[in-house]
Amino acid sequence: MTGETAPRRRVLLHVCCAPCGTHSADVLRRDWDVTLFFSNSNIAPEAEYERRLTAARQLAAAAALPLVVDAYDHAAWLQAVRGLEDEPERGRRCESCFAFSLGRAAAYAREHGFEAFTTTLTISPHKSSPTLFRIGESLGGFLAMDFKKQDGFRRSVEASRRLGLYRQDSCGCEFSRRPPPGGSPGRPAR
Image (cartoon, rainbow, N blue to C red; front, top):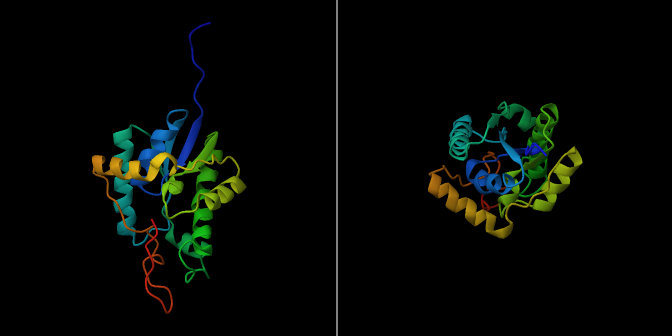
């Protein structure tokens, strides 16, 4: 026996935002080599996207984790949710949005030899983990992790405060911030 350890498996963690990435990355790094993947073409305006990207870079530096930044393509994202603009939060538009971002993560993971990919989106109490699992698993190579378990959301809030990370009040898409037709604005998605 030479004392060498086998290389750890690599996982690509789709990061919706830095605060959600804190606890999620900590959980994963117990068993995996983690690479953060910032892919958020849903965020508008671009200045908000840049603000969240800055926070993701801050997290990557603090956690000493590599960060891959996917190309920002809001026009492609708008095409992916076309016809669903007036859907309620947590409805079909959100499912199409998840499929768009997770599809990009799955493609990057395959192209770059990652054993698996997963997403921080499951840490939010405003996102359906079973829906995310269904979409992720349909893409292949998905690691179904519900990061809200064991008080994950609270831990992410505490970690983001400790690190001074920007915390937003919506998922970032322009449709989550406007009132539905004939109604009052709902609770913002996170």
